[in-house]
Image (cartoon, rainbow, N blue to C red):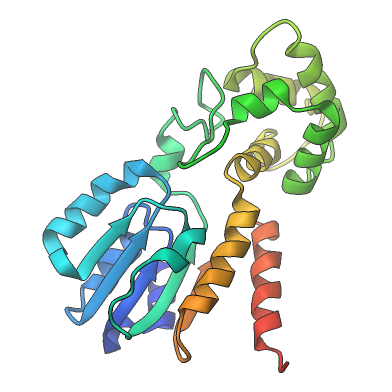
Amino acid sequence: LLNELISIISPLYGGTFIDCTFGEGGYSKKILENKKNKVLAIDRDKDTHLFAKELKKKYKNRFQFYNIKFSQINNLEIRDNDLRGIIFDLGYSFNQIKNLNKGLSFNSKGKLNMQMGINNFSANEVISKMSEENLIKIFKIFGDEKFSKPIVKKIVETRKYKVIKTEDLTKIIDSVKKYKKSKINNSTKIFQALRIFVNEEISELINGLINAFNTIPIGGVLAVITFHSLEDKIVKYFFKSLSENK
């Protein structure tokens, strides 16, 4: 959706843009093609600094990178008064999925993780220590998983005698959902729920949107790309609420 988003924020006119989900720098690079533009980029994942380093070398004072959560956007020092757009792409990059140490993929092995940076806990702590009741809530609310109860019951039984690793979790899920026919991987919803909970994605999104709205001047553009229904509902509610006459 690079071209679609770029057409919405109209960087051709020049100004300052905030890329709240820098990742591998796709949006920032495109915006910086216009010499009139500046980009302030944010990403909580410290591994993205390698991509940021390349852009800093090439664009110097027109590019700044901050290894913070996007909910902290209001802490940025915006020196000039020409902020034109703020963008959020809430998906994960291919490199993040491919990095098996992060544990976002079903193909990961070893200790559960799913931390994207600046975290208070990992998926391992959630699966190992969270109460049965709360695990069910997490999987139901953040993953919309219909088989939450039997999956959690099996997790609780298994963790009594072993530390549940990523591959163990996928096996547990498969054993419960073995007769369920679906186009998506059996583990998709559970992994989504864990990732959302570990990274506090819902509160991050809400605070990020509020602080972005308070940062952008009248006439500026706030653009958000969502990837699942929870994000979508929050963003649509947020925009609807702001667009009504009050």
